[in-house]
Length: 403
Image (tube, rainbow, N blue to C red; front, top):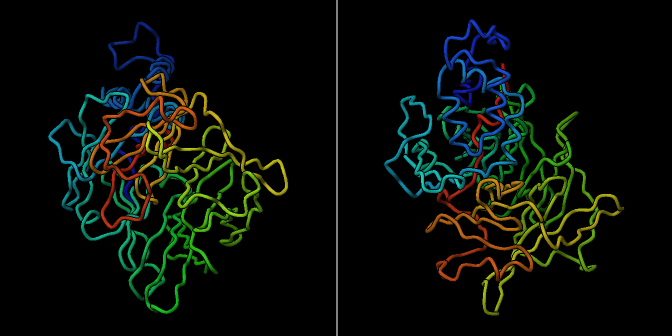
């Protein structure tokens, strides 16, 4: 299995952290402690990429940096636009004999710098999008799954699914980076063998093993899985929540919840979950018929201090902003202190197919944030698409473990 990142494990030996000043010959000899203090001040992914690409010792220092995952909450995710091809400086990408499609990449911290990544052509033309996780694109077709690093092109092929027919994929995620010893690939899928009997399964592949475990689902498929406070939370098609366990066997335990305003069911059609700091949020939109923003987004946090757990409206996200794509299977993200890179708090960046994104104010900020020049034909209802849509992602180098 290939490493999901060129920068993970880039150095065979740990450089000395305290060389004598008289021994320093140049920038490559700077102490690791000093280099780590420089990394901590980085304000964008491009800064980090430039740092890691400076020389071998700096790349090794980046690999050893213990807090790379903090960039996943302090920097905005990168926007991948598979339908847009560009000529631009490229991000790291390996060639292993597979045809690659060049896609536009946008870094909101450097929006005027055009980047690109290269995704295997087969994931665009022959396979169905199932999700993305830890910098990996998860795709499937029939009984086959494929996990591809969005930027390095490294590929992992799990065993064939325990189905004998064509398969529909509804969600896919990794429980940890591929390089982790306890990483699992979770996929919710439907076998299409019997058109009169719809059966959904949640499948678990311990990365590196030779088989899947399967949990048959009774009456609703799982549409989203997130990690929150050390446990995995799954949401089904009817917006019911479950805790998901991997051991001693794959299982789901429903979380009893009460909707806001004592409603009997969720009033939204396709709400989505996102972890935002110490909150688990449910977010969705409703159409506005007044002048100003055509859609309004509201967020609700899950209060698990009560029994049953209760959804509570969040009036303002204060120092956070959210990111979401048009495909239900693309994971949303949150980012703290967006002003650090030029973003806006209490807002939502929605990735589109026809234009990069639209910006929405949450709650009472909807009209104040809305840009009237935004394309009026944009669609804001998330869906399951046959063609890969624009999606947000953090590179796998943010999750690599220093060696």
